[in-house]
Image: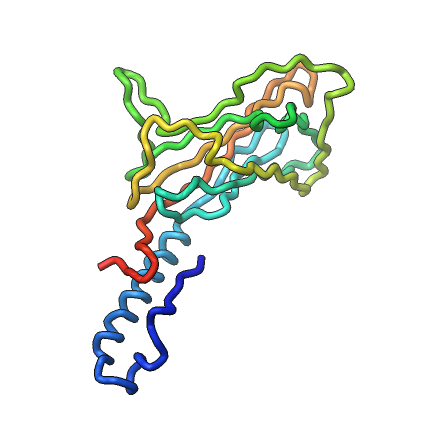
Length: 215
């Protein structure tokens, strides 16, 4: 993250002009603002479920602190074989060229260790979601697998995530949220259907316009 502090001229620093007191006040606000950003970033957690075959799915976001008015950041799914045997994944993340990924995304608000969504009647829905809106007729020559030996990882970048999401309620600044991403694999092992789930917490915070700082 880069901020432009070019409006603070070199001649304005302590000892150079009578306006030192005002400059010090501005600098204190800068450091306080950066300190808040650092604390929130340190508390953003990523974790995932480990399936019965020893593969853990986790989500790594491009950034976990951003202004709710910004485009939702890209992220990647990371599959790690934490088991003792070689396993395989069905390579079905982008089955149709030019279409979105074959995954499911949900965003929930978090507060007090619990997550909340948008209530519609008696049903509580995620604040935002995405699901692949297509069906696939699979040919034998189109089925491919990813082999993971113990300790190996496979990463799946999810680009332009902001174009995928449908919002029931827009994100708001000053809130904490949970991103949940799932991938269903029903081909890696005959007769076995698995659901891999990864999650990441993120925070939203208002970023003042260039040359201005929160009070």
